[in-house]
Image (cartoon, rainbow, N blue to C red):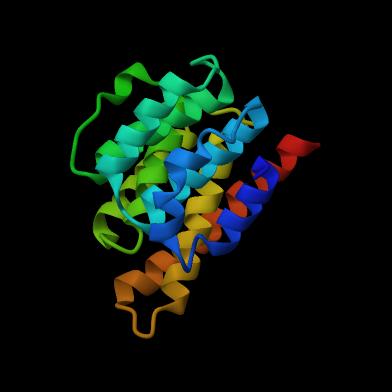
Length: 195
């Protein structure tokens, strides 16, 4: 099977067949050859293992092993994505990675990803993590920094998830509106990146 066929099918099925898609990751890892393919595969792994399944320990183990069998620089976008995802999975799993070894941009992405992972599992912690990411982004972060997209995606997903809830607490409603406003602000910054 070609990687392009695999990734299209996996994304199509990931929300309804999460466990099956995740179980196929070890085999699928051998299909990703180019830098772009590895990047697409890593995005899928992070999304499925982190947000959908909440299998953070397994995600850490898989991503750590993936670094050994694929060829990319640790400073490449793939290397940074894996490094940030591992730290975010650790936070999601109640571990405390030392974020001081990461750049400010990476810290924001880690906090936003951990907030996404916990969005449907731990409202208060997820809210706190996203608030920390936003506070960091408002201090000396370039408008074109990719961390802005991480905040836009997380706050957008948070707002949508809360909007779809059958009943919300007043705190959840207030946070839903705040997240919509955060998402609007940071999507605008991602637009600036492309200009």
